[in-house]
Length: 339
Image (cartoon, rainbow, N blue to C red; front, top):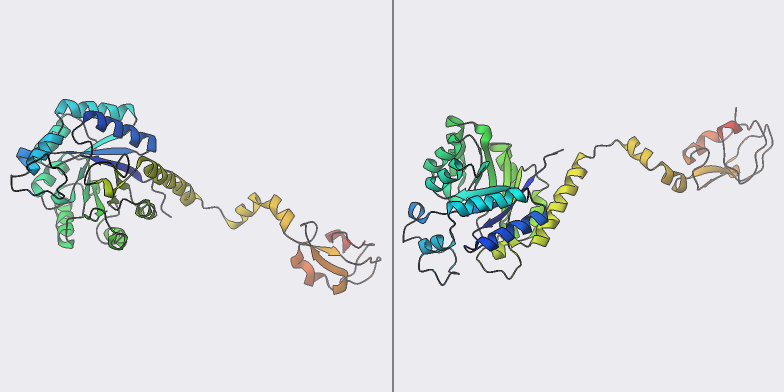
């Protein structure tokens, strides 16, 4: 049975809309929910995209281009240090996905991250992957925008050039929100069977159900988007959980760990329930008065609660036996009634 304590990542991404105050308050929400890690995104538009990059969802009417959006919601290095410190204060790990080597270098060289989370759009960006794996930190790579051949190429690249044990493949469906019928959770086992036992799940369903189900798999990480409520602004809100929902997922994870660790034997469980067994199990009782030397007939025995004296399972063994003392109707049958 899997005893992995799955780390839960609350993905804030860019839902803060460039507000440091909102970013810090969302860290507080994640901390109160009990997650292990909070994740942001680090976009440097000049190193990441061109003016031709389209919007995934045209939600941001104030931004004329995707580059303008990245610039508006971005933070300075000093902001990132402050955000990291706030995470430390709330006993949360700060995680931030870079979308360029330049962003990755700023995160690593300033000791801001302990591991990497790489978005699925970078699954074939071996220039970026070469850098993050060269840091010898764990690298969580989402697979949502990759084909099977992309995963195979990634695994081969890492296995050939780096410590393969640093790779964690994250099952992911890049549909916002992901419909249940498209969740394809069996691909978690596919990743384990064909590529690596170190796996995770990055969820975009906006539902607790897929998060609960994902936790029944042997995953090391579960990533879910966080939004303050279902009416919060932003394209990721429909794919997100509220702090209350996230707290329920954390509680389910904690309960599941205890359940998975429970490997008691049936006899051990019986010992825990022995007091209850004495009330509800049945024993043999005398239905007749018998004198010493008489043989037991079926009509002399009845099966009743509570469990006191000989267990009901002994009924057949007692028929035809001789009692060695007088027995009274209504009293429990005892071993000492027989030779």
